[in-house]
Amino acid sequence: MNSADQALVAVQVEDVYKSFGKVAVLSGMTMTVNKGEAVCLIGPSGSGKSTLLRCINGLIDVDAGRIQVGPHPVHQIRAEKDKLALRRDVSIVFQQYNLFPHRTALENIMMAPIKVLRQDSKEVEERARALLKKVRLEGKENSFPGELSGGQQQRVAIARALAMQPSVMLFDEVTAALDPETRKEVLITIRQLVEEGMTSILVTHEMGFAREIADQVYFTDKGVIVEHGSPEQMFDQPQAQRTRDFLEQVL
Picture 1 (tube, rainbow, N blue to C red):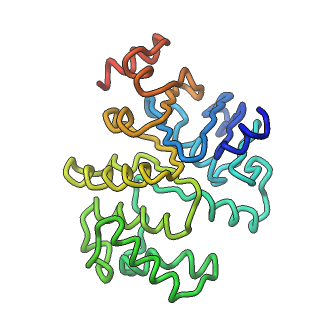
Picture 2: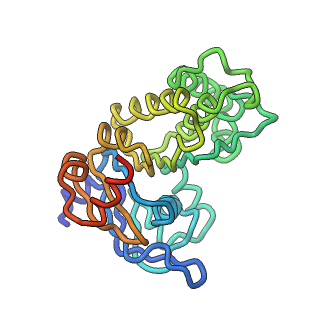
């Protein structure tokens, strides 16, 4: 890859392996995500998708291979200050909202920038209020998580991730625990971020959504990437029989 191409790359995953005990979870995964792209990872449960996201965010160390996220050689990072720098640039939103129940929506969003990044509280509060407006939760600043629906809590979690001002967003099955109505609210929020050019990697079972928003779709199975391509290619003309079998089950 020449330097001009490299400048366009936000996330580079090369031949990454990860095992837990004797169980191989990632078996040589390679993936390129360009700046401003939305990439969807699809595949059966247990195929390594969520583990890959955690490796990209430095939550899990890889056994072999390399991961480069912007200026961060993730596969080499061990020091806490380097992990902190990485997580400022790469935010992850999980299936479970993981909000602090005794903190309001506004306080949940403000905590990390103030406590972790040591940013000015007045500036952070201004940003947090703007983010709540962005995810269509204006007026819920003083609500506690228990007073919010699942979809509202997930949108607070997205706002909290955005409060770190990342360059890459990772979404791990963020609608899996939601009912259809609240799921739609969250998908609208994610679509808006993608349309604004936020580099995003999404693990999802929402095939219609993946077709609609993704620039690239990667199908994973048993720790390997079976094939990848545009949504049109992957959903209308998949090349691998394993991909065809999977899509027949879920479409």
